[in-house]
Each structure stands twice: as C-alpha cells, then as structure tokens.
Image (cartoon, rainbow, N blue to C red):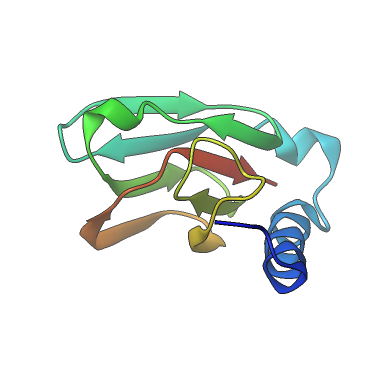
Length: 104
C-alpha cells in the first residue's frame, strides 16, 4: 500500500502527540505491554520500539505514570497504521494486533 500524504500527516501527528510535552526523564519510564498469550514485555525509552508480536495481540499496557503511547499495526512506526493511542494504563476488550509502540 503506498503511503499517501494524508497517511503521513496522521502518522506524524500520532508520533508527535506521543512524544509532545514529555521531559527526557519521563520518556525513560518503563511501560509493560501484556499480550494475549500472557507474555509481558517491558519497553523503555522514547521513540518507536518493536513488540514481541509472536505472542498474539496486545491486551493491556501498564505504566506507573501517565506515559503517552501509540500502538502500530506493523513492526515499524513509519508507514504503519496506528491502531490505538492514549496515556497511562489501559486494558483492551479485544486484543490489538500491534507490532510496534511509540512511547513519549
């Protein structure tokens, strides 16, 4: 699927929103991603990180402070569709197939 300018704008806005307004100290707070298999992956640092997508869909994100996040369908944050974004801990009613996360 070719990347259209509208898709790039949406993707860039989602990444920028996840990274906006956070100090360097806040960006390194760990976030725990829980998969439908029960596997838990701890993700640290700002920017795009690849998830252990062979564990099924994401069912929860746990964080001690309201860290912003965006989940992406592909294993990269560029060119992939954002499937969820938010701040703080969240539980999803249905597992989300995500291969990458941006923390901010």
